[in-house]
Amino acid sequence: MFEDFRQQFYLNFVSEDRWHYLANGLLVTLKLTFFAVLLGLLIGFTIAFIRNVHDNTGKLKILNFICNLYLTVIRGTPVVVQLMIIYFVIFGSVRIDKALTAILAFGINSGAYQAEIFRSGIQSIPRGQMEAGRSLGFSYFQTMTKIIMPQALKNVIPTLLNEVITLLKETSVAGYIALEDLTKGGDIIRSRTYSAFMPLIAVGLIYLVMVLILERFVKMIERRLNKNDKR
Image 1 (cartoon, helix red, strand yellow):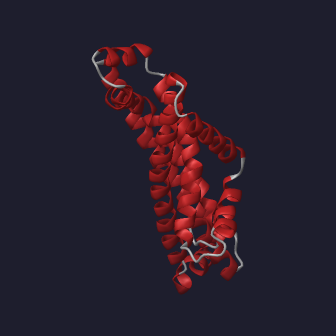
Image 2 (image 1 turned 120 degrees about the vertical axis):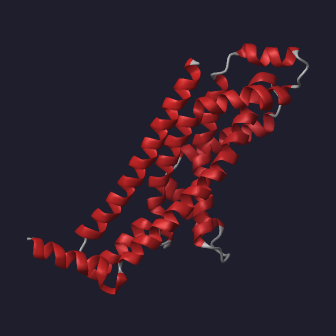
Image 3 (image 1 turned 90 degrees about the horizontal axis):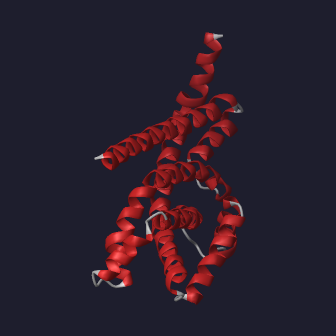
């Protein structure tokens, strides 16, 4: 049994340096996740701000309608379908880097969920904070940026980090546009060795380790925030 395991390990990872498919795929996965999170933060913050302004002042009606339409479409359709539409339909007649396409797709998808996270964070701040800011002579925008948003961001940090974990796992569908991410790397090894068990288990374990590390980081942040609240 051990000898068979050793032979399978050598065949799938050592022979022809096939472990490079996993290593290179892991780097692609991390890059997609990192830049998609940044894009999602920008989109999510902007949408949450627009919707909150509309809810409190009645302004920005057209932008609020566009934001609501965006949230409905993005949250109501699978991310893999959005990825393929962006790559094969929107950029179908243009030569564009697959990684950039994936970052756009995952960032746009994540932005819809981050928008709701930011919005819930803003709504968790007592209305008295807004009234206090306005009574000090701050404009609505100044009150939001200097008083409301810093507090809201602190409240939603753990939830945002959980969204990062979700996004990390969602990038596993990047192979649908032939992008060699971690999952695709394992599938390439499987196609070369005709052995599915070991490469796919390895992919699953790598994802599991990354998620466990991130979850530990989330718990550490939550404990630190709770300590600060008690002071």
